[in-house]
Amino acid sequence: MDVRRGVIREFSSGTYRAAVQLDGSAGNLGDVPVSRGIAAAEVVAGRWCAVVIFDPGTADDAMVVGVY
Image: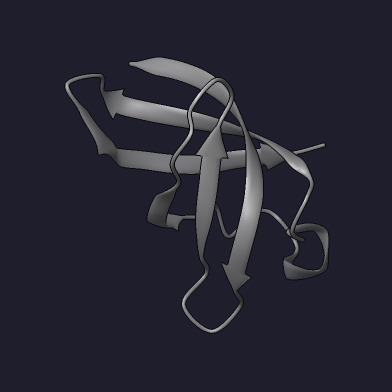
């Protein structure tokens, strides 16, 4: 398990999923689940976020667990 910093690029409140650009990465992770413990109003494009990557070999196996 790995915790990385990223930036929210897009968020869908209907699916509670986001596109996230990890710090130091040129591309985005798309369709990343966002913790339901985070209010939808807080998940806006441009905000920093904490992303847990459960399997470091598979960056798509991730979840946004916080925004700041």
